Image 1: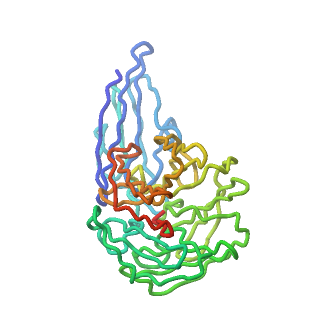
Image 2: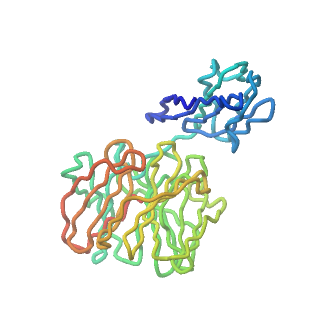
Image 3: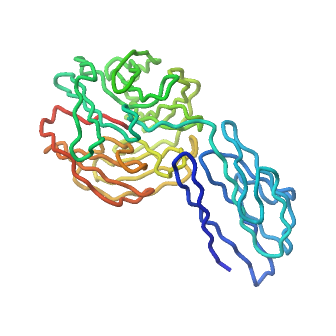
Length: 369
């Protein structure tokens, strides 16, 4: 009655903990079957008596015994890795016949590989990208020594037209490299630099979006395919949208819920749940509120608040995995040039670290986002 069990699964270096409930309703004489899903992939679990369709319905009450068979069906791009709990194992069906409450977990594994955004040097962590909006210089900080990062300005060409804004990073090619995404704030051109070990080796144009109220707000995995998709926000209307990408090709577009208060800006994205889904991070330009949207594909599955930073001179400059296998938020003070990282466990801030101050405010941190 109210007993809680914890199941832990590891996949591709990620540990996912799933807490599930075993419940018995003594007053009604019924017992509950609870189904949970975990892993880097996705799929559905159904029962032969149609009580479970998980999906949306992941628990059901039974007058003992629980007598049903569960079937796991992986989504496109995922595989079913197996059962745990309820006496079930393997990748076939799960047949239950129990007079007590039962909890069963189905593990789905993604067939796709996922890169660390901004990992230009294959170190398992992101580098920090800078752009000088006076000279057009661009620089990468190698964060292998986080507290004394190495500046590698020679690796990136200068782009003297400062109307070109560096707006995101992701894998827009056929390999596993992190590439750089650009947008021209006057003409609406969009382009990708393809990178190899932190060096720009080629470039491609993406479709133009001439309405410059549409800003590229970040990149993420909104389709579950491992491709890098592009997140847009309209600074005039508050509309939000995703381009679903395959390399440099926009396959389709999905609208997200609008946020009409345009003082809310999308600060970037990261995998804060540790399951290869995208979390969108928001900041309010007037009041310093910070918030998050957990995404399930292109659907907002949950939302919540982060600690408020009322001093709006502090800007979220980058969101990336700089250290410990989880996303961090990098802040820059636009008056004094201070730089600070928030480290997270899930969506909880666990520690704060200062980086070297860059007092030349022509230098802006522009990624990863």
